[in-house]
Amino acid sequence: MSLHLIKLCVGVDSVDDLEEWVARRRREKRRSGRPLQQVHVTRMTPKRSDELLDGGSLYWVIRGSVQARQRLVGIEPFVDADGIRRCRLVMEPEVIRTRLQPRRPFQGWRYLKGEDAPADLGQGDDPSDLPAELSAELAALGLQ
Image 1 (cartoon, one colour):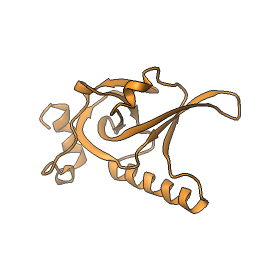
Image 2 (image 1 turned 90 degrees about the vertical axis):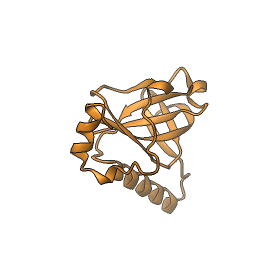
Image 3 (image 1 turned 120 degrees about the vertical axis):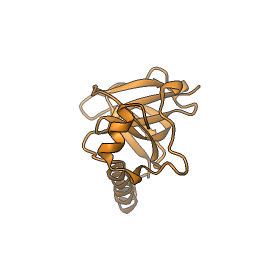
């Protein structure tokens, strides 16, 4: 069973917003000639990197529920210009929608066991069929 990370997606209101943010960053990088890596910088470096890179993903909590994930492809510790240790979480740019799973706010990232991760949305599981508020309420009740 894979090991994953879970993190709040601050400043994003929906999965559509996250997808647009990823696309915009890729366009900016392409124009400036920088590598097209999709990264998220964190302060702490995961100690269980090998497990995370063996099929793990970064699950995004958006507006109080896990709603999407991106597969992890690299974990790169580095020291920034101020001499502070940081870590780049390198991800595939594809955003995969998941079933909603309510989560309380937390700081930083947390490990997420594979058996605790929400399932990907399959065919016929179109979340746009329901208003976001109703979908979140159904998930909180364990009905979605």
